[in-house]
Length: 321
Image (cartoon, rainbow, N blue to C red; front, side, top):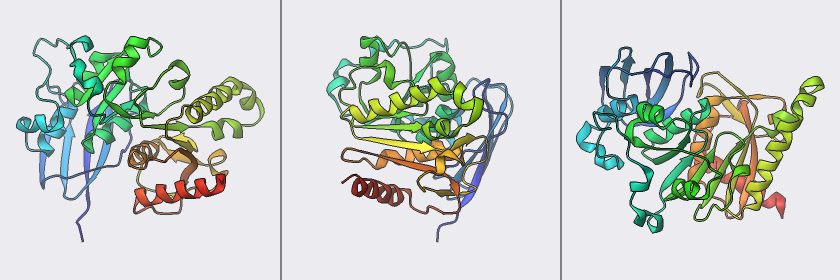
């Protein structure tokens, strides 16, 4: 039996993540501890489930970013950066390589990247951290490219621009296999998603529809926006997974079980960290056409997410026949 323990990482993120939060990730580490530092301003607690114990405490300031610190230590140091497709840190002068200088030949190359839309958002950051530790190639749409580079280093290809602009969208989608949308709004602003093989949408449509009284009136436009987003996903012709979650809460992830009963999302809640985790787990389960399921925190433990999602997908396909 494998030994499982936790890694507590205290990092700072100004105006992006809450002061206290716990994100469950999986990785492989050595049994050591290290004191590291981060250039941000408020504390964010991340718990990484691993095979051995490793404790991080980030408190002071240093030039190297959090993502570089944790991945350098976990994987043996800067000499293994190339394994991640990130050979070097940012230049000392802080200059940023222009997207136009990217190798154009990659447009027709292997599609192995995962694009996270709304990468500046709280849950978007949680999705990105989960993907980094899973060693995925990550691209992220952000408002401030420099802030994202400082946060995640060169392990994330940060892209800033207007997704409605066709040349920009083409660059953003270069090499992308899967798109994860942690919030609604991206798909209603874009056109052609040529080459994308899987879209994962985290939707709160059930929550919006379940609101009553004055809240239902105030959320009228939000409901229409969420409905439009789901309709665009279904009509895209691209295999899709729509995760209809319950009301998202700032509670620790990995502490509760789950429920997938129909109608549960309208009346129950889900940890934001669990929601981010499920989005990442859905990357490896690609439906032939598409499927939708509801999820909230509940009593059922999920030892194997790939098997669980496959069963939900098969159930949805049988129901649609």
